[in-house]
Amino acid sequence: MTNLLPHMSGRKFAVIALIGTAVLLALPYFLPPYYLGLVIKMMIFALFAMSLDLLLGYTGMASLGHAAYFGMAAYVTGLLALKLGWSVWLTLPAGILMAALTALLLGLLALRTRGSYFLMITLALSQVVWGIAFGWRSLTGGDDGLPEVPRPNLPLPWSMADSTPFYYFVLFFVVVGTLLLVRIVSSPFGCALRGIRESETRMLALGYNVWRYKLAVFVLAAAFAGLAGCLYVFNNRFVSPDYIHVARSAEVLLMVILGGAGTLIGPALGAAAIVLLENIISTYTERWLMILGFVYVLVALFTPNGLTGLIESLRKRRSGP
Amino acid sequence: MMFWVIQTLNGISFGMLLFLLASGLSLIYGLMKILNLTHGSFYLLGGYIGLAVVHLTGSLLLAVLVGSLSIALLGALMERFLLRRFHLQELPQTLLTFGFLFIFSDLAIVIWGGNPQTMPKPAMFSESVQFGAFFYPSYRLFIIGFGFAIAGLLWWMQEGTRVGAMLRAGVDDEETARALGINVSLLFTMVFALGAFLAALGGVMGGPIMGVYPGADFEVMLLGFVVVIIGGLGSLKGALAGGLIVGLLDNFGKVFFPEFALFTIFAPMALILAVRPAGLFGRE
Image 1 (cartoon, one colour):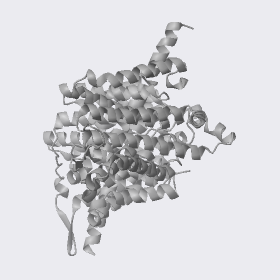
Image 2 (image 1 turned 90 degrees about the vertical axis):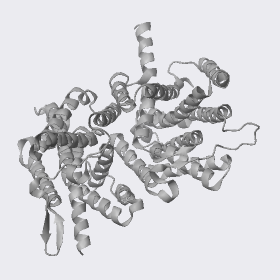
Image 3 (image 1 turned 135 degrees about the vertical axis):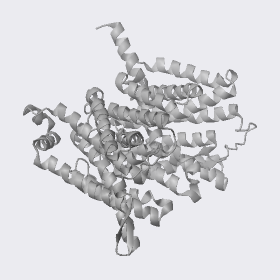
Image 4 (image 1 turned 180 degrees about the vertical axis):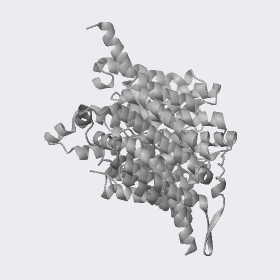
């Protein structure tokens, strides 16, 4: 558990997690619906960023095509809900399953490479998925996307069209997803992933089938990205090829690095920070893209280890050698 | 028959523009292992600057020179002052080059607006040429010839000159090249500038047939990556072959399967990745 934040004991983490959950549970009583919507978006992107961190931070595989799985799940869930009227208990697993299957197929191609070549291959392969969403107009609506995807209809007295019940719906899945991710990274499987990150050859020498571990984590990460994509399509009630665009893949990479790869809490905070920043800046200027561009450059120049890394190095400096 | 000839020539001329773009991408990756996501911006900014020069002076030759040389300078500055700090660190490099893609993309909209623009053709090539019964725009033929000329020039530079020998040494074994007294750092800046120059050249030359428009930076960057994946990274031959293959696939795909035009490019790419992960001419 200690690797959620470096140098944090299990008990300390449990206390923080409890307080965090309590705050999130109580939020609808404090926040007006508009801000609640913002928090929903933050939570969804936090889950998305944590899913990429499984690859980038824990296994050392930098993917520049992670939005392919987010978008694939969003399209599958959206189409099944919109055209066939399936219930959320079918559309959500179907979306996640399709994301995982896509990752299995593309992973077989991408995993033959590493480093910057892996970045490029994952980028190019995500474009294949984007190309299908963009080109197959009769099914996906092309670049107009799919409007009016219905929110889930649950056998509960509250309508998911209202922001408070939907907030709890998203919170439930994000918490479940996070707990599963915590479980994965602290399991023997997670230890093996960190071993691969540190030295692939050593893991091979120890008898680990590195390739199989990499494929497994590639598919797993895609499944969690898929869950985030499903939640996002319900939130927006809309899906378009933008969900899959390389700009989104790069954005989630930025979130992970900004927060600090290799911790789960870091990418979640990084995601929240970017979503918040976009929201604030977009209200003042139309030049959000340019400012986001500068954020990329500044993160590359000044926080290569992310905010959690920055905190860590400050703490080290304070306590002295 | 006429249809096939015309469509093939269209594909080849587009392929030549892709070659200009991809050769720089490939050279940069081959030497420095940098995945340059700003490459599409070099193409687009080159086009816009060329356009501005045409509007100011009316000279297309000047447009080509100013457009490509100013972008070469921009590339040199980016390499010297930013990318150099992150040698062989792919994540900061990716963030940097992607950040500049956004910055330049938005800057172009601020300066030149959001409407697509077209570069005029040079007067010499504004007509169509006639071969027996059919006509073909002479500008596209000029691009094909120009592309092959640049390919020849690059090949000669790489194989026949001292700088080319240094470049090949740097690609093969950077450390040994440094130990032998080759100024690899200078080589890095030069190659990055050359790549930016070639991309901008493609942007200006392509202006009359492709137009200059917001979003072209993303489009050509992605096509450029497909070209180098198919052809093989770090290989000039690969960039030429890949450019022609993707140019033809793109053109015939749009003609025959408009709904899946992109797929006709990506499916062969996936196939090549499965069979030859290093690309057609790449080294394993």
